[in-house]
Each structure stands twice: as structure tokens, then as C-alpha cells.
Amino acid sequence: MRNFSATAFALPVRGIAYAAAGLRRASIVKPAMVVGAVALVVSGLLVGLPAKSVAGQTVPTFAPLAPQADAHRSGSGLALDVPFEIQFTKPMNQSTVAAAVTITPTIRFRSEWDVTGQILSIAPLPYWQPYTQYTVDISTDATDEEGLNLVTPVHESFQSGSPTAGEITATKMFGDRASPSTTFQITFTRPVKLAAVELRFGINPTVDVAIVGDDPTDATSQVFTVTPKKPLATNTAYLISLADGGTDAAGATLRSVDTLAVTTLPAPSVTFTPQDGTITYDTNQPISVKFSVPMDPKAATAALSVTVNGRAIAGSTSWTDDAMTLTFTPSRSFNIGYRVSVQVAASARSTGGLTMAAAASIAFTVSTPRTRTYASGGTSIPWTGGIASTTAPYHAAELYYLSLMNCTRTGGWVTSSGVCSTETHHTMPAQSALAYNDSIANAVSRPYAKALADRGVLTHYLDGSTVHSRLSAQGFTSPSWGENIASPSNAGQGGMVSIEIFFQDESWNRGGHYYNIMNSHFRWAAVGVWVSNSVRVVIDFYG
Image (tube, rainbow, N blue to C red; front, side):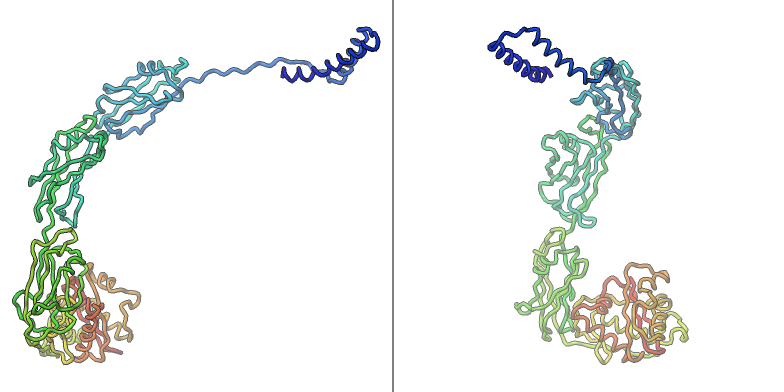
């Protein structure tokens, strides 16, 4: 404002002075006249301004705020080496705060402040006692940097947590077995020193190991990896432990760590069908290789070879869902008299990464096919279950069909004449025969066959039901179940044979009916046959 006033009023003065100088050149003018003119101008300007009285105003003042404080951390389960924090509203005089702090029960501690001087961390020396209720009091003698006392004293409580816990795990598990190439991890809830782990680690049977923590500086390691210097032995039980008495990085005693008991995977072994040295009467004999553990299908298939007189035989391969059974189906029939050699090389590898201890092989001979006949009719099939003829009028046909189905299931092949031939076209391995389940037949299969026959329909979902719902409704709740249904032209021998031949014809692509018949998860079968408006056959499988 001073500069503005000087500039605003300097120019008129110069103008007046300039004019005055000019007047002195022309003639002599009395100074009083000039002064009077200026006075008249100024008074004329003042006449137009409104009159206003001037009043004084008091400048406001503010009293400094006194500091306040509150807990800055959860009040329960505080880790044994973690400080308890107090948050102040203003930067504090640290020496007055230190003098005003008391902790109950008494414990040695150190005070740490953040850069603002407003957050106090009370760190235990060396650690809080486990499961203890502590009370922190700060009296109003504590002041801020301006000397103002706390408004109210601090009275905060917290519960200290549990001692550091640990867990031992194996890193490579397959089901309930450990791979011989596994490492082990010891995971703690708080940092632990490497020396504490190395001193107390144990493995039985003894194995040389290397132990490293997840922090190379060894300051904050909580996960330690234990690596055996050599692969563990196969099919061997190991105990991995950490002896009691260790401490965490804060010096607090560790909780006991549960011992880990693991058994390593066995090396894969195989069982062949046909067995070594046997004679098969099937010129299309499928070859089944059942492994003792789940396998890597690609590696195990590559390890399989089938030869006749040293020459490889072409064929297709398939695996069961559990990756434990490999089936080889020859592309062409074997000649009678052939001696077939089957070998699985030691390179066959399990899903756990283990190869076989040694190659395995068998040989079998192909002989002339044979047949056996199944009779039909009530007199040649024994009656089971004591079912009244009025409720099971086609029970003989039901049992006859079961015998045909078991021919297929156990490795035979039903022909159009109703005989069970050893010459087959199987693409799945043989299984043990299915037992007839009267209860399921009476409660599920036969009633459902009657409902289908009465309505002349063929469906698994009549009236919105399902195979599982029909079985479960009668108390059959196993997770292994299946169903085949058919509508033959009659309920006699020819009708039952036609059903089985139709199902067998799905073997080339392992279709659903054939797959159900050969499924290893099933142990029982129930057959229901009914004739009314049509002929219907229901076969329920149960495991």
C-alpha cells in the first residue's frame, strides 16, 4: 500500500510543480494564491464523501489444545515380541511420557517413537509373557512439546498372545504317500532363527539334509525348507520332528511342534493279464497291465511293447480313470499257436515321478477258442430270493440275462447263438462276476421295468426321476451306481441274447452300456424284466 500511495500521489505533485515553474517564467504569482487553490480542490473532494465514525476491533486469541491419547493396536492376542502402541494427538515431550508410563504386571520395556513424535511403541524386553492381561497407564504428568499436560490419563489393556507355533509338512504328496524326492517345510507363526531349527531338527531313519530359511539375513525367517541330500528310500516310513526347548527370534519358548509321519511311495510294480505262461483261448486277447500306483500315462504307454517272434504287434491302448490299468487291444487277431511276449520297460514312470525298479515281462500262448452254453428257462436256472411268481413273473429271464452279462464281464463273449465264447473283442480288462442283488431288483429294477413297459417308453428319467434318486429312495446310497435299459422283441432267450450282443458291440469305443458291464467299481447287479404293453429290461449296477 505504501508504494501504491506514493505512485498515486506523486504525479499530481509533479504536475503542479511543473505548472508553478512555468508561471514563474511568465510573471510573479504569490504563493498564497496557489496554496488557496489547492485547499479549495481538496475541500471540494471531501464534501462528496459520507461521514462515518471509526470503531476499534479486538484481535481473536486461541488457547493451545492439550494433547490426548488412545490405543493404536488391537487389545487381544498381541504377538509376544510386538510393541503395544499409543497414539497421541500432538507431538509429545518424550522424557515426560517415559516418566509417566507404568505397566501392570511389571515388565521391562523400551520406548520407541515415530518421526512425528505422536506414536509411542512400548516394546517388551525381551517379550510379553504368553496369555497375560497387561494394563498400560500414562498419567497426566505427560506433556506435549509446548508443556501442556494430557487432558485425561491413558488406561489401556491388552491380552498377549500364544507362543510361536510351528508345523512340518511334506511338499510332494500323492494321496497319503510322499515322493522320495520330497522336501519338507517347517512354518512358524513368528520369526525363528536358523540355528534354533538346525539344532533341534530330526528325521528317522537318519538322512543328511540342508536347511535354509526364507530370509537370507536370518532376521525374519518363518518358513524353513529342509532338503534331503539324497532321495528318500521308496516305500519307507519316516518321522520328521523338531525337539522341544527352542525359542523364537524374540527369545520366547516355542510351542511343541507335532511330529510328521509319512511313508514314501513304492516303486511301480505291475500285474499282467493274461498271466505269465498261461494259455489263452481268445485270438483277440486284450492285454491288461495293472500298476500298483497311478502312472504317468504317456511315459508308461511308451514303455509297453507287445511282440510275436520279435516283431512288434500293432494295437490301441486305453487307461482306466485312476491311471492304474493300461489295456492293449491288438489291431488283428492272433494266430493260433502264437506265443505273445509283453514287456514294460523300467522307464514307466508313476505320477509321483518314480520309475520301476526293473523291467517286467510275461509271455502267453494263443490256443483254439472254446465256448460254453447258458441254458434258458425256469427249470435250468436256480431260483433265488424266494420271490413270488406274481411279482416276478420273468425272474428266469432276469437270471439268464445276468449269466450272459457275466460271460462278457469275466472275459468271455456272447455269440448270436447264446454261447459264451473265449474269442472276444474286448477293449477293457476282465472283472470278477457280478452278484445278483434281490433287494434292488425287487425295490427298483423290476418296478421301473414295469412302469416303462406299461407306458411303452424307454428312458432313464421317467416322471423326473433318476437312477440315483430311485436307488437312494430305497436306501441304496453308494456313490457307485449305473443303469442299462433295453427293449428287446421278447423276454425269452433270443431277446436276452440280443441285448447282450447290442451292448458288446459298443466295445470298440467303450460305449456306456459296455463300460457299465466292465466297470470295476460295481459289485452287484439287479435285473428287472417286464412284459405288458411292451417288453422292457432294466439292469441296475451297484458298488
